[in-house]
Length: 253
Image 1 (cartoon, helix red, strand yellow):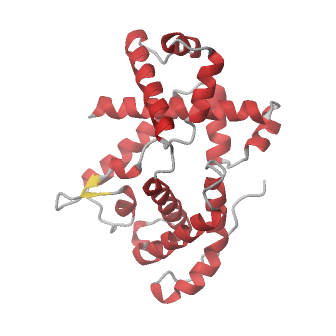
Image 2 (cartoon, helix red, strand yellow):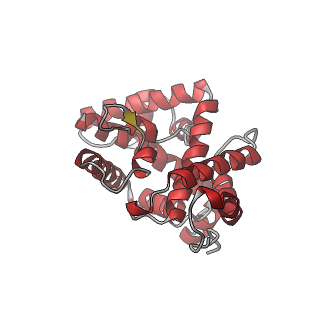
C-alpha cells in the first residue's frame, strides 16, 4: 500500500536544526493534513491545515524529550495531528444543527442501552426516534465528522494541580508520576473496550481506515462492497464509538 512517507532518524532533534527538520518532515505534515481534510467540508482549505501542522511540528521540536523513549517521528505526527484538530475545534466548523443531531442520537442510544442492557439495534433506534431506517442512516452520516472525544477533555492534573493535556503529558520528562501512567493506561483500556464492542464489520472498518490507513475506495475493494456502503459502515462505527466511549467514561467517573 502506498502510505506514509518515511522520514530520516539521523537528524539531531533540537531547535538549532528546525529548518532541516521541517524540510524533512514536510511530506508527513501534508499527508496528515490531507487525510484529515478528506472528512471535512470543502470550504476548509488544506493549505491552512498544513500551516497549522507546521506549527505543531515546531512545537514538537521544542518539547521532544528522547528520554521518554518515543521516536520523534511518532511524537511529531501526534503533535501535528493534534495541532490541526485543535485549530478545527477553535473554528467550530461543525454546524450547530449537526451538533444537535449528534446530541439527540447519543441521548436516544444511552436511553435504550440503559433500558435494554445492550447497544440498541438500528431498527430500535429508528422506532424510538419515530423515523425511518433511511432517515436514521442519513442522520448518522451527517454526524460522522463530529469528534469522538477531545483529548483535552481527558486532561491529567499535574503536580501543581493544574490540568494538562495528554499532549503535554506525552511531552513530559521520563519520570512521569504514577497517577499519569495510570490514567494513560485507563484511557488505552477504554478505547480498546469501545472498539472491541463494535460489530465485526465496523471493527474491521476501524482497523483498515485508522490503523492501516486505507481510503474508503481501497476498503471497498478489499471487502468487495461499494464505496458508499463503506462510508455508511464508517459513519455507524464512529457513532457507536462516540456513544460507547462517553458511556464508559461516565461509568468510571
